[in-house]
Length: 483
Image (cartoon, rainbow, N blue to C red; front, side, top):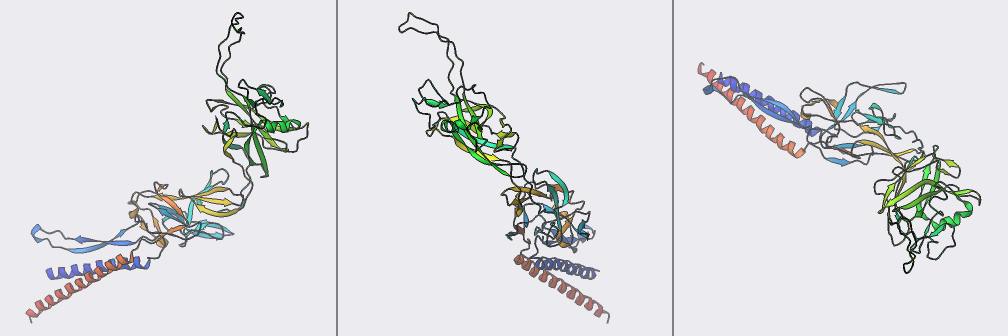
């Protein structure tokens, strides 16, 4: 029986090495397959139950060992919609089941793959070279909100115009403005007033007269320009996407001062002291204007006061906290209320040698309509479209999942995998991985390593055949005894 057991063990060895060679051949054959994960072979000894002093080395069994968690090399393709995962995870895909009346239908089953050579088909769906249709969330390019889930279809429709609703603004206003009329001794301009220091600061007479919101007439435009500082300009957009230029200027209407105590009159003093009331501390105050009518006549309103006092204390803006430009209208085109988005510390008043406004940020959130010109993939898995108007918008969020035991997924055809009990349920999200756009993942097969395994497999297979021939000789000798 021992000889027969040796024959059976040798046969199991031949089967195991044949199984290993089958995996090796498959790995080599798929060495150029995008996203392929090689299959290694585990050998396990199979020992029958025997008393301790009768145990034998036993036969062998061969089992597959998946390498789904081993990263393949990334290579650039130059194709915008190609993508690869750096780290763990899988793209979610579905298969196409039909195409009736120009409407595609897809399987309900979800598959997982590392193959990211996605390109648009004739209907705009993203499909890889093995027929897997990429799934995820479709996004509204204007709001970024999810509009649906399932196979991702890239729309080539024009990006609708968006009106300007907010202006992000940041600048430093000089403590002492340097304007054309801000020269000591110049009292010709009706828009100036003398300060106690003897210098001049551009104002609109008193801070309260004219009241906030009072526009500047065309007849006073030259004086106004000489007494104010440029605050930058930007192009805003209407509901229809028509551009409009918004020019801004700053006027300092009040210099801050420390509080003073009341003074009692003393005519007997030398020199005599006149009575003076107590004065509270005052802050620096600026007004913001924009050009509402570039063709204003002498009696027309040219520059509009936004109607809010910008107050500064110790160089920092103290109010308003949420300024707006009410009914922003330029040359007859109205935008309604536009918010001024001033981040903390973005608008300041510090002394500068130039005495001019240093504008750091002037950005708005509107844009004209545009056509799709290119696509790109961000590291967080968003498909972003770039449009002819210069804007970019997220069009879709790529579906990406991970598994607690990815090596327990069941391999399917076309480079896809399906969930098993051992793999666990899919966990949505990158969870530390990232998406690389314009690249694909190569097979993780190392041909040199496979050749080495093939040589070892061949030697082991040959050795098992020698065991079989030796056992056959011994059996022949046994049979010859009775002849």
